[in-house]
Length: 287
Ligand code: 13P
Image 1 (cartoon, helix red, strand yellow):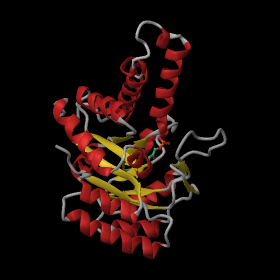
Image 2: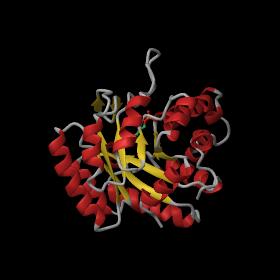
Image 3: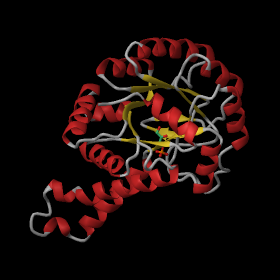
C-alpha cells in the first residue's frame, strides 16, 4: 500500500539521512526502482512529472500500475507516489486519483499567490492523508519544458510557506535540473542553513540530484535535507546501456529484438544507479 511521504521523511530528518525521489517514465522504470528499494530495504519516493503522467496516459494509469506492481512484487518497504512540480490543477487531480503525495510548485507565482494556492492544496490533501511539498525560489534548468532560473530562495518567504502546514519544502539553493555546467559554483550552504533555521524543522528537499558531488550531498543532508530528487541520471544510464546493447548488435542475435530483452540492460542500469544513490543518501536498511 502506498504511504504519504510525511513519516518516512520525518524519520529521515531525525536519523540524518535522505530518502531518494526517483522519477518514473514507464513500467521498466517503476519496476527497477521498486525492486531496488525492496532489496535495499529502503523507503522510496516515486516521482511523476505532469509530462510523464501524460506520457503514461494519465494519473489513474500511474496509480493503477504502481499499486498493481507493489502487490505482485510483494513490495513491503514504504513507497510514496508523488507528483513532481505539479501545477495547481495537477496537484488536485493527483490527490483525487490516488497519489499519496504531491508537490505543488507555485514558485513561479508571486509569493502571496503561491501561499494562497498552497493552502488550498494542503486543505484538499489533508482530507486524504496525502503529503504536500511546496517550493520557493525556482530550481534552475529545464524539466518537462518548465524552465527555472536557478534562483536562491528568500528565507523570509520560506518561513511563511513552511508555517502553512506543508510536509516538506523545496527551496532553491543554486541547484538545477539536468547535468551541471562546468562553471557551476556549487550549492549555497549559507542559504540552506538560513532556510533550515526558519522552516520549523520540516524536511527540506533538494531537487536536481543528478551530478551534485558526493561531499555536497552529504553536507546538504547534515544541514536538514531529507529528500533528494534524481531523474536525469536514470535517463542517462538507461540510454547508455540501451545504446551499448544495440551497438553490440545484440538485437540482431536470436530474439534479441524482443523488447523484454532489449530493455533489460537499461532496466539493470537504473537498478544499479538507484542503489548507488540510496547508499550515498544513507537510506539503505531504513525501511
Ligand atoms: P535531475 O533530473 O537533475 O536529477 O533532477 C530531478 C528533480 O529534481 C526532479 O524534480
